[in-house]
Amino acid sequence: MKLILANPRGFCAGVRMAIDVVDQVLDIIEERPIYVYHEIVHNKHVVARLRGRGAVFVDDLEDVPEGKIVVFSAHGVSPAVREHARRRGLTAIDATCPLVTKVHSEAVRYARQGYQILLVGHRNHQEIVGTSGEAPEATQVVERPEDIPLLTIRDPSKLVYLTQTTLSTDDAGVIIEALKRAFPHLKAPPSEDICYATTNRQHAVRRIAPECDLVIVVGSKNSSNSVRLTEIAENVGTPAILVDDVTELPGTLPLKGGARAEDSSVMLTAGASAPEDLVAAICREFVRRYGANLEQWDVVDEDVEFNLPGTLKKMMHARGIDPESRRIRVVKTPIVPETYGGTAVSVTVSAPVGGGR
Image 1 (cartoon, rainbow, N blue to C red):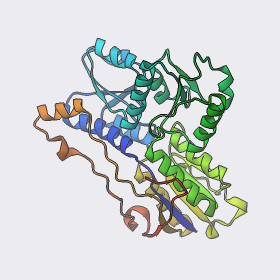
Image 2: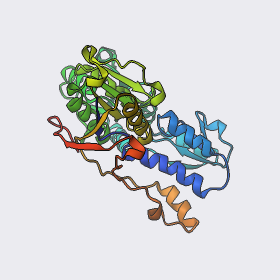
Image 3: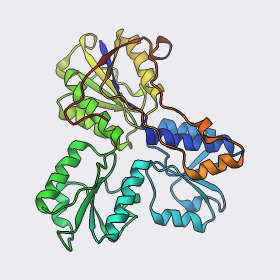
Image 4: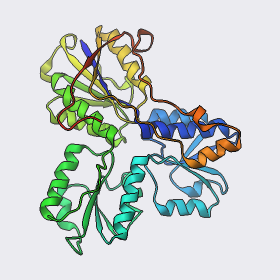
């Protein structure tokens, strides 16, 4: 068996920053618990680890005692939530991904200019709830092309679309093209809203999956970007499974065309909120089960980093801590036998047309 690790995979800059925020707060604040509004990222292993350190995840700010610290998740919150936290005297640390904040800012700006906003995404996803809350009177959510005839449009010449950052570029493209056909004067955002990491991981699947008998995506079921990776693999004709960890691997792999496991090629990738140690555990299991040979196919290199939020930096400075000294840098994880069960041959492959960043 050939086990192909996709690069890039796993944590993006926004997820890395958000998790780092909670870890840093737990490091420098002695009181417990530290409250986090919603799951900091959509991965059950990350949440369980932080819960074990003393974080408490809540879905209602009323569950946070007055005057305590609360961290807002990577998916962002609405102004109403921020105001609620202020009224309760909470010290809010905003771990919203800066790329989500960008979409929030666009919504505010276009609403002020008199535009109606057509927000492409999943209606109940926390990111969409937060973005809609920036301009609720001006925003309508579009989940699929069938929603378009149901929209209430005041002026077709004053429409703009924005998108959820973790959508499939394929699915978003279908909806956006349908919106453009319905509203020829529809304005686009000044730059792409779907984030670089989502795009890069999807491009890697499109490039590698057609050459494989199976795609395994490591990620939780509530991770939008992880689910999209399995859908993209299936769209190019390769079976795909989504697993939280090595314990969810099936005994018999659903390989394309009934291929023998020993003769197959399997792609392994991970959603943007999945830790690398989960990927390594699956590699070890495949080496044990099938004597798999590891390869890493490098489609795009990523080196994006985001700064810690200002509120947390102030807390650090007040305690004599230099925030720069505590930053987690982007490093490429070496694939070594102790961690992955073997070493990997590195293969550089080109991204699909339009891919990479």
